[in-house]
Amino acid sequence: MKSSRIISKHETSLIALFYGYQEACIDRCVAHEENGQITDIEHNCGFSTYFSPKKSLEQLGVSPFQYKVNEDGSVDIFGELNLSKRQNSVHSLPVKINKLFGSLIANDCGLYSLINFPNEIYGNLDISSNNLENLKNFPKLVTGSITLSYNNKLQSLKGLVNTLNGDLNLVQCHLENLDELPKIINGHLNLSENFLTDLTCDSQVLGLVRASKNRLTKLNTNWKYSGLRTHEIEGLDLNDVIWGVENGWIEYPLLVNIENIKSRDEALAQLKAKAKLLKLI
Image 1 (cartoon, rainbow, N blue to C red):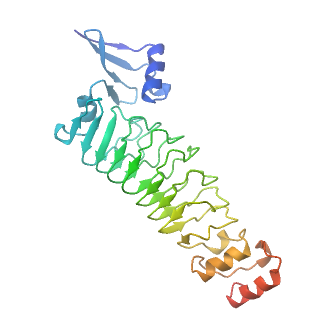
Image 2 (image 1 turned 120 degrees about the horizontal axis):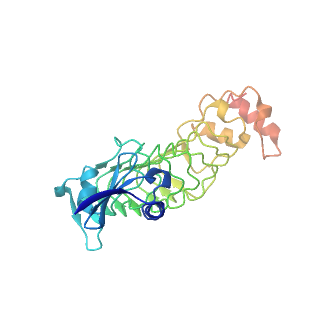
């Protein structure tokens, strides 16, 4: 026997806790039942949570030929999983994914939580422009690039993989430090439009680093930069400025007001002389 009813406030809290939803998303949602058991919940945003891997995957656009169910109830998916067209409707994944053999694209779809995210992704991961506050349940392996840009509620990078073979994009994440940055990044790193002042850390970056529109006072001289404009480096130590120009990482090296450049070197006159030779002043 099938029936429908509005779920209680107690059930709302339990479902929010288990599935990582915000309670406002499932307040006064409709529970569909069969023989006294809830089969799915229809959310007030139009998205549904099915208590069946088959229906959950169908809702995500995964065909029966693209996945297998493991003994623990998780699934392996063969092919790309693209949720980017489901704007503000996928607050967390409704079924646990173990391995994804393809890219996961879930930008601008309303994610609040990474619960049920794949343990391993053999491809790229794009979860930009969402509502993430932390990276709990982040995949243990991503073989491609990672894009977390425009998650401006993100409080920490804790949970990121230690080694990344692709690029890492962290544009406009309101970052104030580089704690928990992967130790090895074999691609490019984009840190633009954050609140960073000091780029020194232990991370190794093989590609180029973009760090425009920050509040930089200290560069990481172990990195290669894609270019820093003059108006972005006036708070830098003059030693760092000269290093950046000599290595070709600082664009437009004409500094109008040299006194705005701080120096940790007592021999400021020598540095100014060198700066003049490089046509910095």
